[in-house]
Structures are given as C-alpha cells and as structure tokens.
Length: 148
Image 1 (spheres, rainbow, N blue to C red):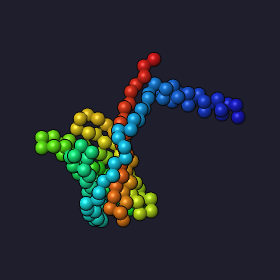
Image 2: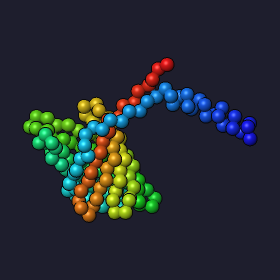
Image 3: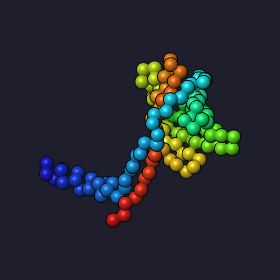
Image 4: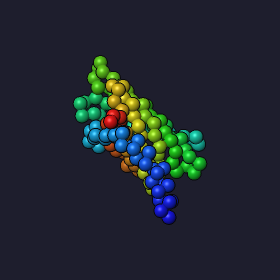
C-alpha cells in the first residue's frame, strides 16, 4: 500500500509543480446582462438563436448563436458572432465558441469570447425560450505565467 501511495505521489508531483507556475484570474467584466430573443430558427442540423439589447451607453448590440447538436440532441457546441453599434462612428465585434446543454427548457451555454479590442472573456449564458430572454455573465480572462 505504501508503495502504491508513493507511486501515485511521485507521478502527481510534476503536475502540481507545473500547476503552481500558472495563474488564472477571473474578474467580472460587468453586471449580468439581459438580452431579448428576436428569433429562434430550428433545423435538423442546428439551431440559430438571435438576441439584441440596448447598452447602458445608448448603443445597441446583436448576437447570433449557431448551436450544433450532440448525438442525443440535449447539448453540443456552438459559435457566435456579435456586433455592438455604440454610435454613428463606432462599431465593436466579438466572436465566441463554447458548449451548451439543456436544463429543463433552459439552454445553458459556457463560452470563450474574443472581442475586437483584444479582450478575452469567459461567460455563462442562460436562455429561456418561454420568456424570450437571455442572461449573460462575462469575466475577463487573464492567463499569466508565474516565473520562479
């Protein structure tokens, strides 16, 4: 038994040493955002969900999510493209990819997003088709290597 424990610790030690050299920091990008679903297009290959919201600064944002199904149809992967129209001269964009699953009638999505300003975020989305609403929480993603 001692030899087995020693072997497990010997094999695991390098993993712990490597993990100590990396840090993942998540910082809330902003408060939870509420979106309005404008359309849901269902096909046998994918679902396309389109949402929009008015931003706090007065602009408007639109996002389309393309959800592919896994073998049982209760989850899968997705990609998304978004545009933010801040004012007459300013447009932002974002590209996202992630995984999704059903939680009852809700669709829950976890994503990584690349924004046009160079920011990377991770997020959690909940879509309620009955209420035609979507909520999104995003966190700024910073991965840094810690040098010894």
